[in-house]
Image (cartoon, rainbow, N blue to C red; front, side, top):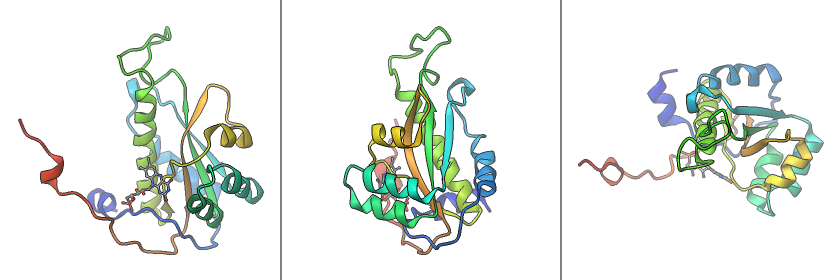
Length: 180
Ligand SMILES: Cc1cc2nc3c(=O)[nH]c(=O)nc-3n(C[C@H](O)[C@H](O)[C@H](O)COP(=O)(O)O)c2cc1C
């Protein structure tokens, strides 16, 4: 798929068919997402695939701070991917000191790049995704056994799309670009 076409046409998908998503499919997507740029090539982003229905439903019901919109999306998706990041890598020196004045900022920055690359790769392979930011990090970490020293940067339900959403309104270039 052409890159620009993919960037323009990828949409957040919140309704999925019942078709299963396999570990092999997610491996293929991570095999692309791993080429995302990262702070000093620190590659601190990790991916956790959850296909176990009971665990996925528990996250949907107890891990989204009561935001039922997200409960429905996660329950209706055949699989859920957690975007994780290893602490104190992006934005930090080897001795643990901050490389810039922006502290943990770069950890989320790298996670965001990886998340979008993951979503674009999934789209190219016929799978729909949506990045979810409304979740209870402590609860989901505990439920899923996120390793010590890692954070959850986003939840991404994934599956075969069962909808074709319109493009949500986008600002024009004139609103976005300043030239000096
Ligand atoms: C950081 C982030 C957090 C988001 N959190 C949610 C969420 O909790 N629930 C949801 O339905 N969509 C969520 N979205 C999806 C956005 O609503 C969506 O990307 C936006 O409306 C643009 O639509 P598009 O992705 O189809 O272009 C999130 C997106 C991002 C990047």
